[in-house]
Image (cartoon, rainbow, N blue to C red; front, top):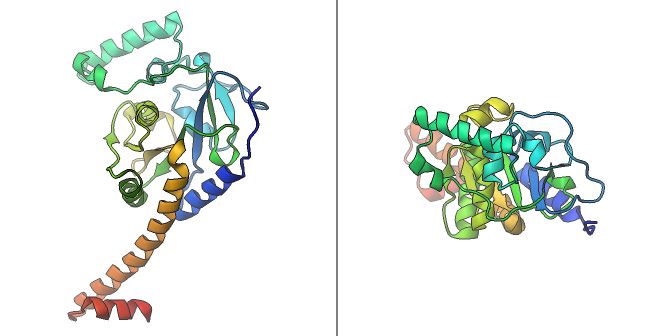
Length: 256
């Protein structure tokens, strides 16, 4: 039995992130566990790839085992799940195809993050309803939102979040292994399997242990960006009208 904990904090954090970033999809919590949390069922239905669970988890909580990732040998690999013989064969076949078309060369494989630990279950849920403290929180974001997130990363972690490519699922072990946030530009597979992952959308993953710190900085930075955007728009209009405003002039116009 998984001990219960107070989910109120995570519901508040989900609300804060959604409001500050104007998210179109609720934040998704991902947790790794060796036991099923109380009241959480295994995922029902078929998915073409494990990344699809990120979208499904926006509306309900569920757990998955390696069997639920049956059709996604790459996801089983990056999440260090126990593969079946069929999944291992699929992985070898997929890597051969990738190598043949120059997509993933042999020397590239070592650079793809793989989760260091191994768990029996991966639990997905809306952050507001997470049954466990999240290990990783997934946000689907647009470019203007990644601006705020990149500034938050710089302030919380004194670094810039890496921008990752294929495979999209590798962003989870990247964050788990390093304890640092990461941006994923997705991959062609994820963009085929996830309806939310449109051309102007990317994935930002936050380590659960730093979620509160991120939420606080994101709230401040979102408000600051909104104010500064208005400031710059005022200056642009003034210049386009032939004026030569000082910073004080623009600040006065902003306050008016």
